[in-house]
Amino acid sequence: MHESLRTKTFLTLARRPLMLFCVSLFLLSCDIPYVAEGSWDVVYELPDQQRAGVWHISEGSGVKVEGELSLQIDELELAGSRMSWSANATNPLEPAGSVQRLNFNGTVNGNRFAGTLYTQSGNLTITGIRQ
Image (cartoon, rainbow, N blue to C red; front, side, top):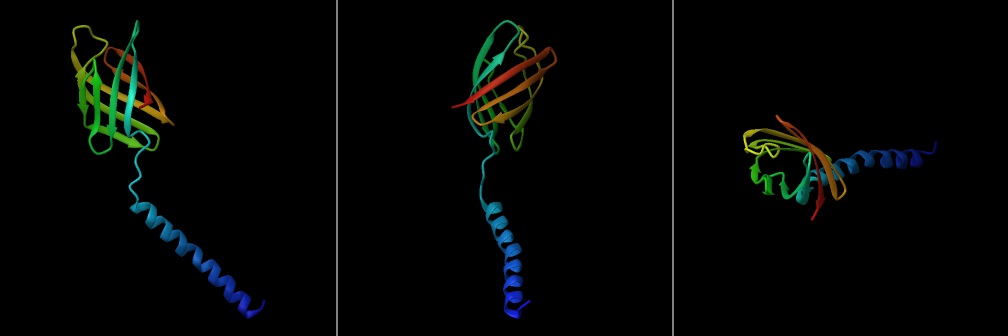
């Protein structure tokens, strides 16, 4: 192989890791929001009815739930398209409004999400559409 061709090939191959490193540094410095962040119109599927509300989701401030069920949730976990949270709150399945532990697990798909709210009295399907 010709010496200048070898040198050129070596320099081309040597630049690739450097370019990947620079791109990685750039992406790490970007403040890319989680896919679940934003405001969502939410529907709670109860056994005999539907209830509506709004969720405002932010990695920094948690979930603010508005509507018939209103609370601030600080125990929020966002990971890729998945989100989960836990809170002590009034159970929407109980007419007396007893306070118990609520846990939510869901997945975002574009401008929609779906998940399950786990309560001590049963589970609710929850869907949301981005505002």
